Length: 603
Image 1 (cartoon, rainbow, N blue to C red):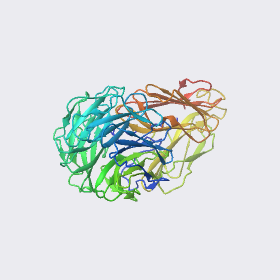
Image 2: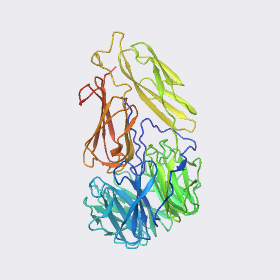
Image 3: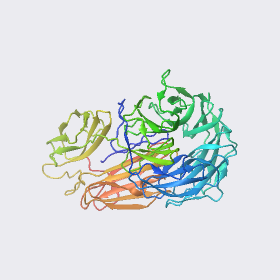
């Protein structure tokens, strides 16, 4: 009943798309998204040329940006309008000198985003607490010492398994990593002495579970030309993996499962203008793959990298900021460790010397956009993703079939489609018929599921499902539903998307598609919920639960979606957030006048 959840977990590190009906295909052509400048982009900023982080600072459902300003010892705040626009909203002093990297996370457990900032020349980390209205202010004891020299990069995650978000920083001059654990109230404490990386001049940093033990590890790029893997012990400690460090020339790194084997791999943007892939062994070791293959091409002087699914095909893609050429290289992944330049790459930022890159849905269309800081031109560019999925839409005739009657299903969309596949028996496998139309008879009264999957000429895949209510010649099926009762039609669809981490899930969107006249209620239960109950009248179009857009929901939070319509059988969906794995989902029905979920009418 309705559409199921499909969160794709990439070892809890990078964005994973969870859209109703989005299925991962096999190897695909070079079809990754094109990007267009948002209106008003690039946006000028006052000297802010450091790293950028995206998140919903004022809880309006739109992504905002925080940009480090190394020259003025501050971070600049830019608020998003939900259409791709950014507006300057002031700045906050970090209390340190030369802020270089920034990360956004809920570091004090109040449900609002905070900022952790590395101060390179004062050798400390600032914690700026969010007020939920777009403002940041230093925590009482901020900044916090790293016991090391020149922190230049930062990641967040639960390094000691207490359910709170901690901080790890790579220190350039001392070639080590400091882990600072959170007390849940705005304080950070070193877990012990910094851990040496085994290389020199440590810089880019990525977090993930590299040995599959459920504990957060780190990959660190060193200026001496290696990647170090530091394995976490779950108590805030780190130690080098066997064989670490591994040789390359990293300027930026990113982590993800590039070949679909469930093990975390690493992509490295090299100072030489190339991209190398290192396959994870599941033990913390990294090896080049494919063996003997030439590196991929980027631009001149890569500076930053994003690993995420930009074209919504279920496979991870790469985006690299090239400071030397003032553009972005976008490479489309095929899910088998193969990458090809996307159509339209390289992508101009409209500024000079892009130094930092981030991905997020800046205009609320469900597609990940790219946001770049242009160091030389002191600006921020918003590049909107214009990838288009095929539309899996179909009609059925007759609209109210009776048992034994032949029902015809017809694909009703347009586009350059290479394959149309049908699931007529509700088993989730699209192998019952192929082509623009299909038909079958349903032998008995009841409720049946029919699905359609379409694949376009570029390999992009989309699907949809529909509930078919079949009645007997004498009237509604008495065993399946009380006489006179019927399902809401078309039956509501609930979609959720986001990205996972050890601590929970960052929700990109929760949407409900229900017919006009229906009432939608969403309940949120658990620590970190932005609301307890949200209500809206359906209008036949997709409703977005805006308070959840861009929100982080901790492990254990439960969402319940109820869709009612007077005198009809409604829909109930329960979604529970987990760590290190996709949320679980259960779909049931609601008897008229009841808020208690029950089994749906069966065939």
